[in-house]
Picture 1: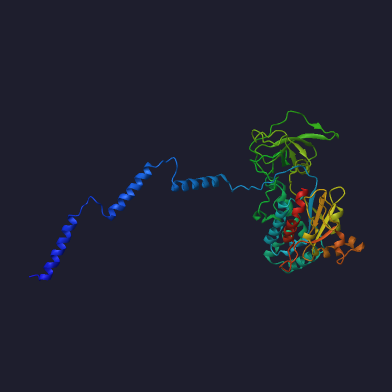
Picture 2: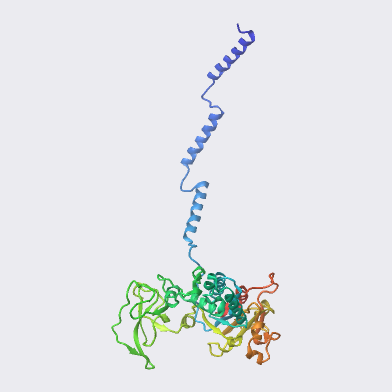
Length: 452
């Protein structure tokens, strides 16, 4: 039998259960009270004026607005597209020695070096690149000739010797720079397969204003005369040009003209009057009547051949760079293609004055005098010369014409109007020529740009 204590506990537990059963359920317990309060809140939200969003809805609306703004900003397309202001007659020229290519050890590194220079020329709107001999090419060719003779039996040596990066560095530099400046739709026809161009396809695009795509319109455009038999033209046009019913004619000088088909990269070719003796696959610059795009690119209208400098001089476009070779550094100056030559010449050297000291104090100031030790506020034809591994002093010493005039390593700076150091206090022992082009043009850009 259960003890008295056990019976007492059972009686107390039964009494507790009876109390719970008799508890007044009309007054909810604490948990029921919380649930009731939550339900009341929900009912209040439902009765709330939804024309004014709550804080949660407001945050969601702000997030949606932000997303809509991001969707409207198309970052896949560049925003810094070249916009011409007005025609300009001023030009910017850089000169570099061809021997810098020999400093690279492989075909791929030589190609990449040229790509860096071409990119700098495109970014800083360089109008002309001059490649000159600095006296180092002969040593490079001799070293290369000995290397080939020692490895004549090697199959790899024959393949490496097929390009001109070793045998003629200046030609290698000239060839690749010309190729990269040419609009992509003309390269296949104007540049046959060559070992120099073996890895040119790996270089980044220059994307200059005259590198127009087939769906883009421009009043000026680069084109190429098409062979009459349409053979080996390097393209397949989607639509033939409209044949002009007019007969051949003559120009004001009495030269015979004929209607010639010109490939412009558009869906339809152009047909214009050109001299009869103009050979096929000749590159030329075309100008269409209006800046506004036509109703259809398949019918762009008539065009005329203009001077390659017309886009720059008439409308202010940056229209790529031209490349020329100079036998010596003095010929860089004496063979200038513009009448009157270069009115401002700048030589670069680690022994020159810091570029910050020669810049005008206020490049955009008008009616203010500038110090004779500083660059002029404006220029017509600017020349900036960069040296090779041994510097410009070696190039001047190797030039017989300059040597006859008493110029050498000690007074090289007398050849130029300004003698500057593009990167004073450099951390590296040397600055490579392709790096000096970027650094130097960046330092001079605040002064050059207003002159554009």
